[in-house]
Length: 449
Image (cartoon, rainbow, N blue to C red; front, side):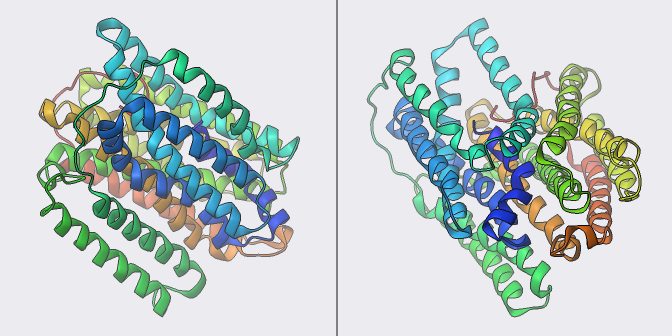
């Protein structure tokens, strides 16, 4: 449910925009609000699971997520829909670390390995399920059902958890760094708002500059708070370790490129080419599967060639694929002008997720592994928010055209070029930043490890 809801709205965006009268900026927030709140509060969610118990937080988060999904599906305007997405993010931030905690504490030995393998496999195929499900539901009962479908699933799982998961063991209550969580989430929200607003008003507008300055101040205050609280949300010493910096960089850029390319291409198919949601969903399916194939290949190769080699090669593939996408033309066949570049980029993105998680956890002390994993996966969600905001800003001229048939392709090609440049630059940074050596392989795309 949590991974699917990152991509399921991509195919539904044009239908949502037409039905509710939403512009580019509002549609961008429909995508980024969920990943922003999910990522910004995930470490706090893990802390709450430690303090109050994993099963209790899993049930609480699932209840919030289910009700929020219903609210989003019944929304009649942008404010209600974005609020519903924010509430979904809160529920997801409580559920994800709690669920992983249950797996790692209730299973042992080979059973734990199998459980984590299933967890990783579900994460790897979540994008594929999301895009296909989004197309099927939008073309069938309507876009509202990309959210409402979570309700019966949520109710069923809520009924099963008390029967399948043992009760939490009472433990000594510890302090929770709520100010730190609020500061990092608020600062990131200002950053995203500034990037999105720049597409409408320009980079030098007062609103854009004020938002970006507020984000910088917020991050500075977060660092200050973390150095002074007794039990920080993130230890600054952990954040400054090279493996953690490497992992967060890889996860941030890879997820930004992934969701940025999904966002652009979904709107290119439907806004410019006027494809149906179902056709769009079916076209996305081989791309999403290519991500999983690339991730599986990297999981087997990383122990032989090392994470640095895979990261550099993978970002190079993404750069080449995005460069091919700059040649898209509405008059050409999708099979020749879009899918080759999209598939090449997708194959390259999958291995970066594996590298980000594996190189981080293989190079930090065991007592810090949980925090390091939480930090890296936080940047999985935040990277998606930033990526969508940036490409939406660059492609603003094409996305804001009222008449899809008359829309220009220039905004899309400019945004694809930006993705190619970002991936190429990331390959160069990875060459220096990613630790050398050959860490143990990990199965799956790495989300949630």
